[in-house]
Length: 522
Image 1 (cartoon, rainbow, N blue to C red):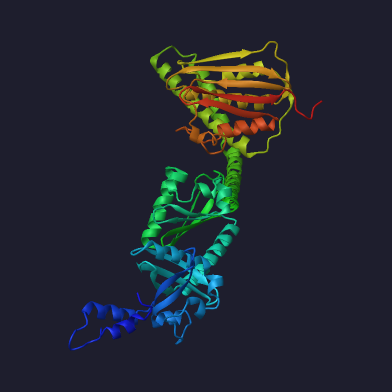
Image 2: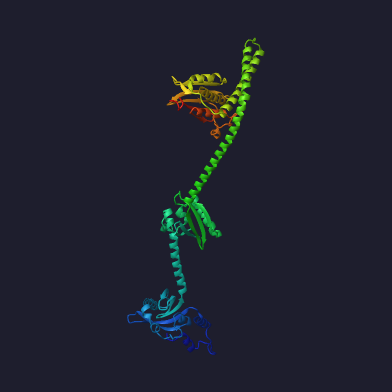
């Protein structure tokens, strides 16, 4: 092919409109494309040395965009070597010339695409080179400087972004729209123990497995991607320590999500501690309020007990005395049915009178300050005296057992009598419906005497076990709730302690511990 411009050839061959031979429409289209295209175009012939290695090329044709892109301006290029036009050509384009030479020698139909930076022009170019016939090349040149600078800026930005993300002390990772990891910072490695290289490109379930926590995470991630609305929630992080708690923020990104997990373990502990402290304060307020209410009630009870002691006790004693005389006179009468009915009436009145007397005694014992009268006391005789005052149903059997010999105690025998009387009566009442067995056992343990009163009754329900020693609390249909409260107060007045063991439907055992002598006695 002659080393003349294609446009010149076209003019010489009358490729423009003539009357004798019209220009083919395809040639007009390609001519317009050549002159109007925005990309640079050059057509050149390769020059080889004697060894067949490409060393230069001669321009056969160029368009204006090529002249502009390569800073030729209006300088003629047709018929000139590249090295004549660009002084820097041989020093900077050696490798490129070799590639083009190989392409030109392969023959028609071959092409190559490459990108490179031209330092003298301070430009990045994309070159599409095509071999239309052996020894010749056609080249389309695009200026990609702006794109490469943008890519460079993005790489710098991405590097800075990764550096920033790795400097974050909390776990931070990113997933694409398929829930595959594309970022995993150092803190995530630290908390999960999983290296970045082991997760990138893997699905969330492949890294964390399928469990309740990971499924919850995936549901939230998908919701964020669908709605494009950020979400914040608190949770443990899969694979992280079970004692570490996180506040997890999920943000939508262009093609997925970013996840930041803030370690709030200490804050959570503080919240729990504050919650527990608040509950303790509430419980203390409740206890003190209850004590205050009890104090007010006990003050009222004390006043009532004082009046009852004066206004009821004396008439009661008179009634009890009259009942004794009436029973004595009845014994001298003949055994008639009338005598029997009168005796039953007197016994019933006496029983209720004694019950009223017990209520008065409980009130007074609970309300007044207790000062024991310490004296030598035989526990066996005290138990015997208590048994004589008891009304025991036929379906209840009482047994007494004790270590032998049992020493004398230095204590208040009236206090002991009241304690044992109340506890044994309670045991009997617990077995009245179905009957049963009550066992009173005494033993010694160091400086304490231990008395156990065990029944086979209904037991004490769990929900009321912490209330049975409180005044005015009772589970009986007939009672004022002072019996066990008085027992506790009397026991503690003697320097002792009372406790119990119980099983519903199996029975209850009360354990009374009393010192064999007061601590202030040698």
